[in-house]
Image 1 (cartoon, rainbow, N blue to C red):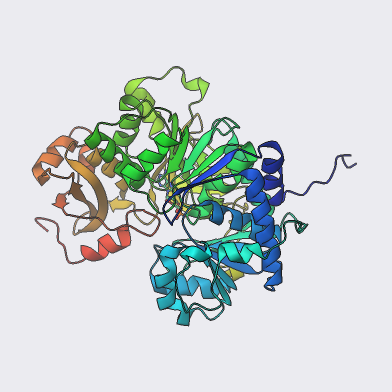
Image 2 (cartoon, rainbow, N blue to C red):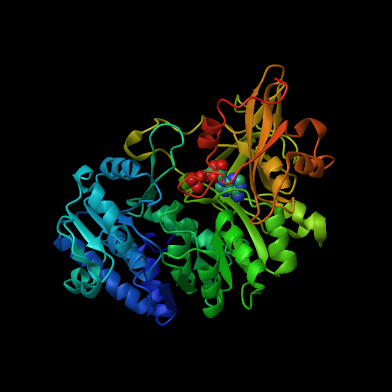
Length: 542
Ligand code: AMP
């Protein structure tokens, strides 16, 4: 027997309809690429998204077609997602930090027909346009007054383009399982692979993200996503903020510590989200300038492991609660987040930070397990490592155009490629990417643990650990550090600091001090590049 409830497909346009009707004047505040701060309410975001949707139809875009965006976080970029999905097409976010050839590769693989972009990226695209044969038109997120002279095909300013659109457009009523968004994974091995979100997966994931143990969004929240819309679906914020009626503060192109701090304060932001490198810049700025937060309550940190020292500084020095999150593009992207369960009691000091350093527990919509190599489940004891696998309505079932073949195991779980422990309370802790773990004499050493410990040293700004060849142990850890501005570090000093804080056999065999550690386009330490840089390096006494 079926239930007798209405069929209300989970379509993305329902989110902006809801925001426009319940929170019409709640603001989206952006630092525009042109410079000034721009303000708009959700009612007008919806109106303009309708114009955008109808304008795409006029340009011949059909449901299922891909429309690329290569742009910063602003109101126009936000509107475009609702416009694109609202007529049944698919937004394809492109990360501008990728190498130009990679950008061309994914735009061609996606078969993008229109590309929407910011003024910042016009020169980049002009240099690349010959390699982008599928793009029929470039829409520049600006107005005619700021439109640069350009030879980009059929280039038009977004403002003049949507002015020809129709506010009375009717949203396309597509199947809730229809494709809505496309985002390529970083592809550290082989070519990038496209993750294809559906309307339903985005709506369900965003609903989960609003809840108090996740982003904790409500009509009284003001959220600033430092995480870009082009990075893993902006951790849901383009949907979860309007869904909950939260005020949305978009930082545009300026993500340095001073600019982010200025917006956090001027807009009285209560929740923010971003990767550790961004917070590192913010904390350095605050320390240097002697600043405090007057409104910020919660900072969500994810994308790479949040160093313990960073968590402690946010909480103990600045009174901001850290929610450590883990996820991946294939998971829409959030898979776990670190709230504190009551079973843990009233934790304080080091005991609290021990838990905060873990990547948290899975929200509803994510099933999680750790398996051995044969697919047998490992115990949740907080000590046993296993391959972390996940399942849920917002987890990829395959990649775009079937790349990579079948990606689910016999139980229908997706292997994340991460190695993790899960404790008896369900708190998961990433110990490594499967390919980064250091295998020393048949035992595993976690590079993340060593990096976390190294950055707790007062003179270390950033640290990375890679495994290097050892004739007896196969691999041993090499620690690579960048000193804080104006400070110096020595290998001896750092190793003395680490001794006694970890198992003796985990202690790195050597420390190399460098000026800079390479990062990937999504702000993670680029271990592939580091390994290449240290290819001819030999450990002392080997
Ligand atoms: P991406 O799809 O580019 O966002 O990369 C996903 C990968 O980033 C995951 O599989 C993890 O290896 C890593 N990652 C994300 N969040 C964290 C975190 N909080 N701690 C450690 N690793 C993380």
